[in-house]
Image (tube, rainbow, N blue to C red; front, side, top):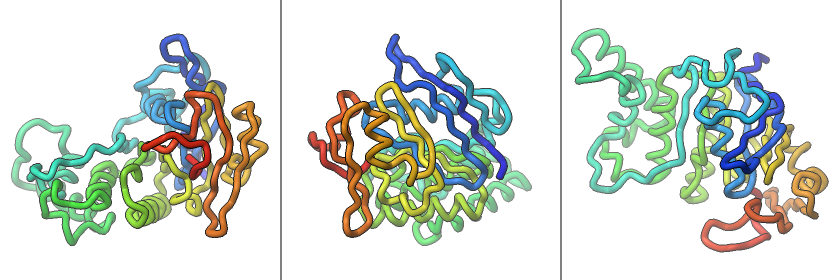
Length: 277
């Protein structure tokens, strides 16, 4: 398979502090890769580094054969951390998708071939994410899962070869997490697009993953889920005893007390026994 993202010995520092270091990983076309780790460890920073928005202290990143920041922007789809649309926002779902198609242009689209071509692409994207039943409704009236499907459609507008998703399941309920995770996996395979997805909880996507990149305070490791998400591997990464348990329904749970800021804590409180993030 063709390698589309290559990270070689990459280190990022912010304000004199090492965020993560010596990360080496590859992502191939059509692979689904999760970027995991506790809050504040630099998962979103990795996506920004791949986009060329965050310089490296050392090492290199290549995307589609080009050094960091030099890849064609239309070959990379990016969905930042989700912002909830206010209920008073009356822009339609299809208009959000349309912004992904030609929102970088100035002015009102001209009638004729260009507009017809854009409208056709919007219709294709809406169908791809299964949003036909509600795409013409106001985005603010849609559920979180419906909104997320339309935002993913917009990120796919230019048929990117790499799709970067920053916690697309965050704030969704469990049924919507499962549905959106399945959608992303289907698009990854059917469109042969490499997906790198920052996740707070790996369990909704675990069965779809080809590999994971796990970040901890100062360190990083990459491999298949079976190689990385183990008691031995995470203990070595954190330098403190960590235990990975599998529940009766197949979910993974991490038990341990990594030092701050590498604490796996619930977003609504503090805990050291939790679903794997």
